[in-house]
Image (cartoon, rainbow, N blue to C red; front, side, top):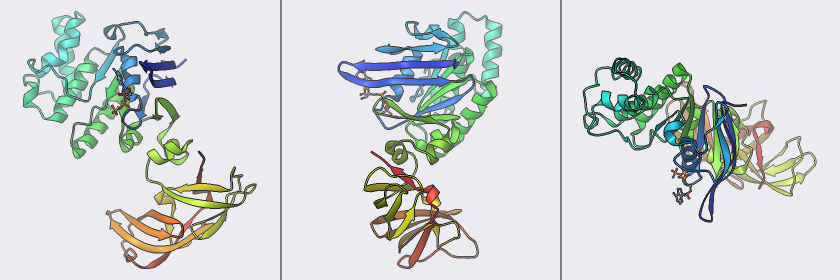
Length: 349
Ligand code: ATP
């Protein structure tokens, strides 16, 4: 059995079912993100694990014990919220010591643990400061230290980076992940930011309308989305409508070209999706579909060049690496875009 095992979880507020038949097993030390649009039920799942909401149906097992029915402080869980939520009238060290004090940990051990925690988050010299004397990123690090000080079995992070500006977000997310790895603590991280989820998670749960649409490693979620929702929510996607010429072999006409997928397609029409990076500028020996079109826009982003082009039946975006010896094509020019059929996703539903 998984270390944290969420079984058949459901939650309704009145007639509104906001979490539906949610199942998830998380191994000890694993870092799992719940990713999805606003209102999809991520926070409600997290709050049920924490004990701030009671499930309508289902069980939540931590290390083999069903914690449904236990109060939050009986669950051995640490939580960091979106808003900084530090006690404003307590110095940093007292904020970190708070849970230890409640647990009745003696003074000497408490002080040693606070020192250790402050060093862990890189704020060893900040124990005497008050929250208002800290930046947002520093306050969130203190909130993390406070959550970890009691040595919880599970760490729950509810969009802990969303109030911070972009640069701090990236550095703090990497720091959180490094600390989580060092401590080996089982963690659930809630976010609506797909880049954040893909970059730091062992596994990602993509949620939609209270349901877990797909659970998988970042590489799997991005490259083999199991539903149309996941494909569209995670990453950038080019969508082209295709006419199905032969259902059995998956022969398609799209974007002014023809291609055989070598796998059956269920209907006479299909939506074909492709990521910007699987399209190449020009033809290569690997391509079995070549689209021709006109370059509309070129964004030079540094290492990557993002090109927008119109092709028969739609517009596409493609990403190509910067080549120091050859400048990108000019807007208005005509070009070919090649892709291998194994990179084409046929979206059903
Ligand atoms: P966000 O990213 O915006 O925080 P979320 O995915 O975390 O969204 P939840 O906060 O879990 O979503 O909310 C899921 C749904 O449940 C929403 O429609 C919300 O309005 C509803 N909801 C949450 N808490 C309550 C409550 N206490 N009473 C009634 N409805 C609630």
